[in-house]
Length: 91
Length: 206
Image 1: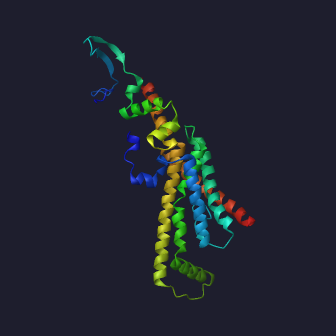
Image 2 (image 1 turned 30 degrees about the vertical axis):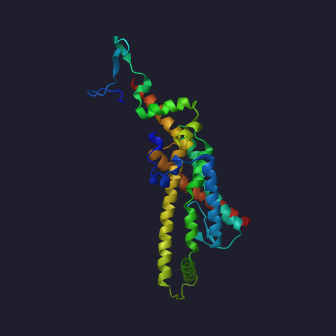
Image 3 (image 1 turned 90 degrees about the vertical axis):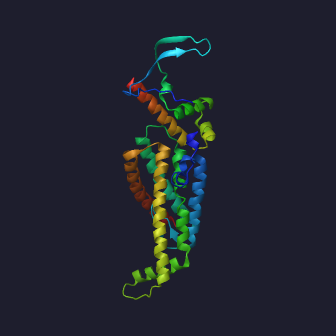
């Protein structure tokens, strides 16, 4: 699966969505849509957040799923929160 | 997921707290501390300070066991306070207590080294020389070699233990960088002093 580019390869600025395409009826929609906040995270972080939601936000359950300790999961979550806060600040 | 892959030997040896913390680490760590105290009692090896190991007087077994527990508690409590001050996250006390206990597991190996007969013979000779500076003692070269090799290994094990203590603090309190290293060193020194005071009172009880 291709990674969704979120920053401009030329100036490193934030990318936005300009065109959307329907795979069913081939309709194309043009406009200017900001990328979702979570899209700015790495694939790995996005998977982590997804697992976290599936685990009902339980750090203990996450630790058991990932076979790591509780503080490791909590630190990882803290790192993601910091990234999201930094992303919000740059916006 | 990447987080669980590449479980390298180095991580297991130098940062096992990525995989184990909390009550599980506390149980294993306390077991290791008590076992090290028990083995230490066989050769009168005292863990008389957060970073100290010395051969000394014969005292009741409970003193050997209590020394290890006092060392662990002193450092854990100091780091707990520092962690609460500098960490931006709400960490669990049990994680710090547990991982600090487990960080002391190399002391198990440290306690085994003085059991070597050659180590004990040379220690005895050294003490005799120190208590009687005028006297001459014929040192046994193989014993001396084993003694110095043992001391070197003990120092390396101590370095490993300190590295584990730092990782325990870093992972449990989610602190990194210069601030974490600085507070850890300060904590270690403060805990060393506290442990000496605690052990002084402990020996008074004995």
